[in-house]
Image 1 (cartoon, one colour):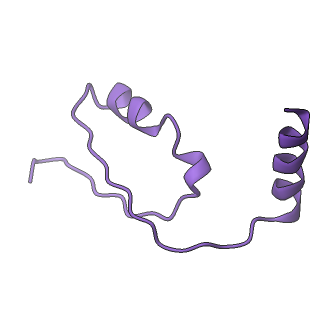
Image 2: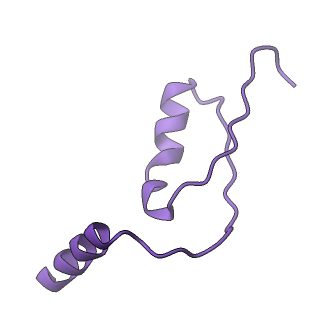
Image 3: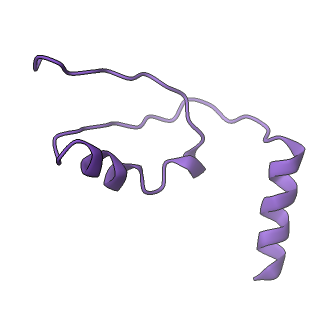
Length: 59
């Protein structure tokens, strides 16, 4: 391990991960790494579901 390295273990909705690799590389001068692994499905809050359905209906 590198000195000063940090490990972050988190559960994040897949929809929030789009663009993460680019953001991580930008913030770490290209040295940051990450992995993703499916963990589980869960119901989204009603407000989020309504937003997704509304955006989809526009298409």
